[in-house]
Length: 328
Image (cartoon, rainbow, N blue to C red; front, side, top):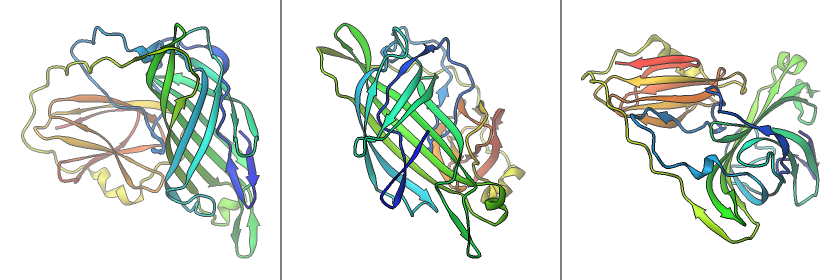
């Protein structure tokens, strides 16, 4: 990915997407990415079910191609106010070509900022578990850190972009994705001399949406209803004691986005539990709730910590994936 300067600012180009064939994906791997920043957003939690829905989800067979308009908003930033402010909006245009003859698959992306015409080519978005994902870690000298009057540029930029199809349609006889949600996470991490000098990391989180612009006669296809929940295990009445891992909450935070993996969590209590992602600043980001007796699986990274809390927000356990967590 290329970093371009516009005036006094450095802008990460992730805008017009051209998707070239990269091979159709087979059955999604069970291990895939964690939060987008959330955030750097993570895929939706998967709750166990007794029987699958007989209806085929049209999003599982729709191709991602055509022209898309994107609007994204800065949700949070940490030490990144030299470039982004919370509430800032950016507009982008995606020009998408098929990644495979039909259906979703890995794609190659060319990204263009329409305001400048600058393009970054050949970014590979991986298709897995219903999400197109780009994850890169690259050296950059475009960001400076000044310590004791000396400037340091030995830093890395971590980018995690996720595009999740949410709507599809039959356009000119072909199933196509018409709308996607987007999450982006940028993190500048000092390395080498910059790290030794005490330079601090900076990050920004964005969310947005992409809508298909191409015309054609279309019929909107909606996703099937949620499958019924599986029979619940008999829950216990009381919450378990607070785990010793909770003592480290104030110093625990996500670092980068490496090592795709997943975890499962089961609620064996009679109370609803809440699972939080601990973001790059160590702040809680509510991800999902688990009803009494239910279990769930979540995709994430090995470098992302998670916290499960009781109804009043009290920490019960902090953990990292891969893991099989049982509460109660």
